[in-house]
Amino acid sequence: MPANRRIHWHCASLSLTWQGLSLLYFDYLHIDIVFLAQGRYEIMRNYMPKVGSLGLDMMFRTCTVQVNLDFSSETDMIRKFRVGLALQPIATALFANSPFVEGKPSGYLSMRSQIWTDTDNNRTGMLPFVFDGSFGGLEYLRNCTFPFFIHVDKINLASENFLHFLVNCQTSMNWENHLTTIFPEVRLKRYLEMRGADGGPWRRLCALPAFWCLFGMHYLFMYPHIDTHTQVGILYDEVSLQNALDIIADWTLEERQMLRNKVPKTGLKTPFRDGLLKHVAEDVLKLAKDGLERRGFKETGFLNAVAEVVRTGVTPAEKLLEMYHGPWGQCVDPVFEELLY
Image (cartoon, rainbow, N blue to C red):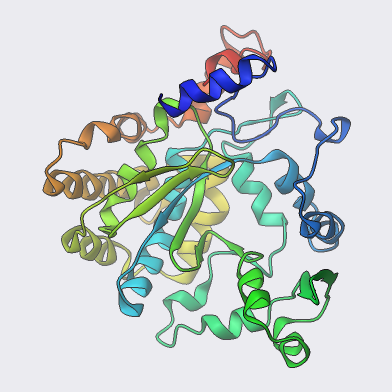
């Protein structure tokens, strides 16, 4: 049974439905939200307001769809990391799907992405060190504040940076837990997480791994940041990866950060150099299409959803806003039918 039918089957008896939304647009503070049975979430609930004004919004309101990329070596990882970070704002624009807050337009096309800019700036963002020759990521990780640690099977709060913490409680478990509290636009674990896309309806999910096929990964996982989990195989494609590296080769730190800052609001209409981000997206989309064609399994159709966005320059969020100001009569409730799984 397909995953979406299983979801409907399990939820029908509970009178529940799943929505292709990336942000709860109503006031989450008025809803009882049950935490997963992990003590870390209670600690993070208390920690987040100390380091940013939107941390609780991130925890309670947002949903992303991620693609996880394999790499074959340290060199391969660095190349993919650089392309992933530089091009992540394009993915944010293509899949922007969270324009509403408190039942009305927020002023952003991806409010989910904007929320991450004021969650905890010490552990989020575009990671400039990835583009340095030394790739000094270990120093960055060591100096991030460590929200919690595990000692003698108990979760405890820690407020010092991880480098100081290691002196007293160095365990592989705490190192692995530390990596899960870093939230940049691309996160390195045993694989690379692409974290820039909004959650969306079922019909657009397969477009995201198809888009990132330009990496030529050995395997990837694509999953909403909740329970659904799908595995898709992609052939290693050196041509698309190198062409992507050539596109971003002379982008400056300031340009990459500018795209990260502006895309949540202006999407593909974000000015970039002598044109718009839409023009860069056209080139990148061609790399993705070429990579799928070289794979030889007639999969370019998965790109149709994003190809339309690139062609028109109109993001999914802008289409929702058009309906809000048009047939919906400035009422956001019809979004539930529009994005129903």
